[in-house]
Length: 298
Image: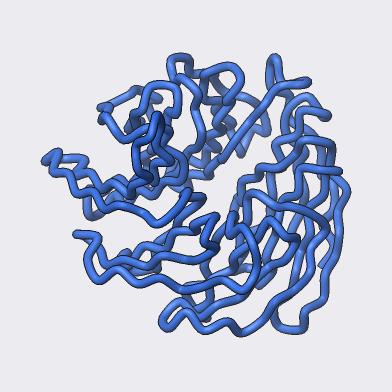
């Protein structure tokens, strides 16, 4: 289950820079990376193994999510989300949000974009839903600072990590109804992904633990130690492993939920964000490597 280094992909001005959430779009076979410090989105051609483009104009970009050729970008610096075409790389629309949008979800088939907003200047944190075609807007208040979010396979529910009180918030789609709060028994719920077939959520927490929960009831089924405060977390259905990026000292912990076995891969200082390129690659965005450290998860 150990990850093997395949190589690196250079990104201009990456050394010593700051990146955030990235996403792989299966339709275009491209990876979209939030280059936070440079207010831009880096686009990687996965097949060619090289940077394809740098897209400017995304102030304080915090993350990218992808679905069926559509990319949703969160911009903390301008309190907005942007909808991109993964093929043409054109920005199709922008939508104003609450302050400091962070975690995000896009559901292309339903025309939904969702942003979890931290808030600014006394503004309450909110979860905001947008109709990408009809511009309808739904917003609910949150009980604490939001982190990352995901949906189930049918896009019938959204799950959102809240830092404090540490919990997972679950809500019905497409209207953010039937809100429930599931307590997480570890401090600082942060990274999040889902095993839709197994009905499990994987919550990486600031107190250096990975929590496994039922995605239907919120029941906690396992807790494993990890190598430090985490950030981006991916479940790979092809291997059954959960990969947790830890920026300091620079690690990826890979946990097998079937037996609890953990393998640790050294990456680089500040490498706290990744992108899973299904079925067998993990892109680690690493300033110390001048771009991307490509690992094999085969």
